[in-house]
Length: 160
Ligand code: CO
Image (cartoon, rainbow, N blue to C red; front, side, top):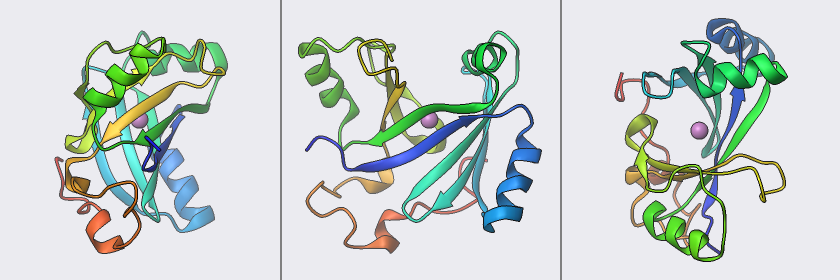
C-alpha cells in the first residue's frame, strides 16, 4: 500500500476565523497550526483529529486556486491529502501509471511538508494531494499508528 494515512481533508471556506469558531463550537476542535502560503494564495488553519487534520483554507486573493474554487462551487470539500513516505518516488510511480498530475515535481507545502497535487481528471473527480511529513520519517505503512506521540507533529509554535 502506497498510502500511510489520510493526512488531512481540505475545506475551502470564505472566512477562516468563522470556520475555526464553527469547529470549536461544534466539536471542541483546537487549532494545531496556522500558516499563510503566499504562493498558493491561502490562509490555512489545521485542526487536529487524531493523527489527521481538518485543513481549513481561505483565499488571500480571488484569483488563487481556492479563490476560484469558491467562486465556482461555494464552500466545501476542496481536496484530500494522502500521507506517503516519499512524495517524489510516489509521484514518479503514479506518473508511470499514466496518472495526470498538477505538480510535475514535489514542492514545499505547509508545516514543512513536501507535497504534490494530482489532477482530479481521471481521479474520480477528487483533487488529491500527496503529503510527506518529515516528522513522520521512518514511520512506515506497516508501523503507522504504533505510537501516537511519535506521529503527532508538534503544536502551534511550528512554522508560524
Ligand atoms: Co492540503
